Structures are given as C-alpha cells and as structure tokens.
Image 1 (cartoon, helix red, strand yellow):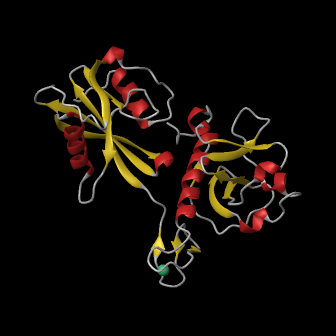
Image 2 (image 1 turned 180 degrees about the horizontal axis):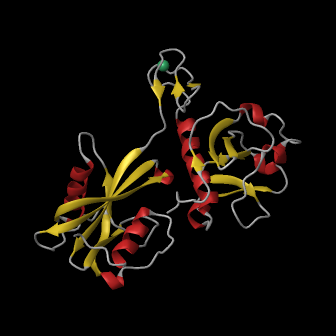
Image 3 (image 1 turned 90 degrees about the horizontal axis):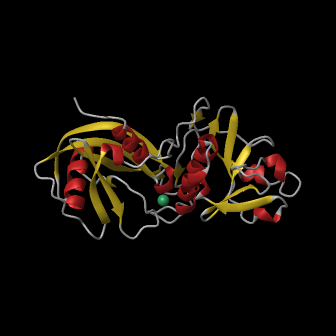
Length: 280
Ligand SMILES: [Zn+2]
C-alpha cells in the first residue's frame, strides 16, 4: 500500500521549523506537482535549486512533515516552471510511481495543500485564518475558531460467500477496474453500521460476521479507509444501485484479478482473499 515506505519512516509530527536550503519543497498548481523534468521519477525541488531565482521562497514556506531526515515544506507560489529544468506534472503520477517513499509524501502534501488553500478565511467571521504554532491547525485571530486537516472516514467491504468475493465496478468514473463496496461513514453511525448500510444500499445484500481488517490513509480524497470483511447472510441475489455501480459480481477466489504491490487497501484485500483468506 502507498503509505508503506519502510525502511524509510514518515514522521507527520509538526515542527516550528524554518526552511533551510537543503530542505525539499512541494509546490502544486491545481492537479499538478512541480518536479525535475529531466528525471523519470518524482524528483521534488530543494530550496537550494531555487535559491538564485526565488531566494524569498524559504521565508514563506509552510513546514509539512519529515521522511527520515528530510524535511518537506509547502510552497504556495505558482509559476515555478519558469525556472529551466522544472515542470508541473499530473498528480496521477502519485498512483503510478513505483517508489512509495516518493509518491506518498507528494500525495499527503497535495492533501495538505488543498486544506490550506480551502481554508484561507474563517468560515464563521470571514477574517483571514492564521497558521497554528506547535501543532498543525489554522486559527482565526478574530474569533478564535480552530480547524484541523480534513479527514473523512470511509469503509471498504469485502463481502464473501464461501469461496467467492463480491467485486464491483463504479458507474461514471474514469477508473474502470474492479473495486469493493465502499462508502462514507455518516453522522451518528459506527463503522460496522456503515458496513451493513453500504452493502445493503449498493447491492441489496445482508451481511454478518463483520470483521475489521486494516486501515489506510488515502490522501487523494481526504479520507481514512477502514477495510472490513463480512460474510453474506441470506440470499446471494444482487440488487444493483445503478447510479453508483455499473456491475457487481461474485468472483471465485482463483479468478480475483491480481494487483500485487498495488497502492490501495482494496488491492491488498483482494490479494489477501485470493491467497486463501477465510474466517475461522
Ligand atoms: Zn473567525
């Protein structure tokens, strides 16, 4: 999964740190990220790379996080591809980059960039928000409102029926591969209740033996994914919610598609089932 970067260590601890030339920075323009155009991998800039053309970048940079001993900052300035050798490339590269220690920091930085950009002003009194000190938050200097990075919980459900797993395809999305049942947790609901509700809503099935599997931070959609397996209870007749899904099918263990080394919890859950996962 994309967050698994061992032996490297992602440290999200917030530091009141000023940028120095050897620190790296992430700079985004909408759905693009600044990288070195001569490299075939996601190669982020250091402040030293921009020292001559943009010596002021360090002072306004926002500390983000640390990977091993490398500090990452966020730079809000646009148009940095005016400097020779640097280009903005699609953030879809975060999904194809083989080295997760390159893609994961870029994707988390992108999430934080959206959060900072979307919360420039206090939603209560319209004053410009101030940056928190000592921890990662924004605070209104006028009314004191504090906000923290947006993380919405989502459940992913592998519904099993003996030796078969329920796979779905989404309607009206670019991603055409197989997925599992998934949906946002609603207000006043436990994760397990969200599992039962989503399965009923999307395919009209009842489930039992709901068991937690693993979780995954998913910076692409500001979500935290909680993966569960659940066993079919009752009839296996699927009633498809057609505005959400284009297809839902029972797939035998050996026919579950391979995505070993995939970036997502969904891919890992499918691989786990394929390798012989069964409830005791
Ligand atoms: Zn306010």
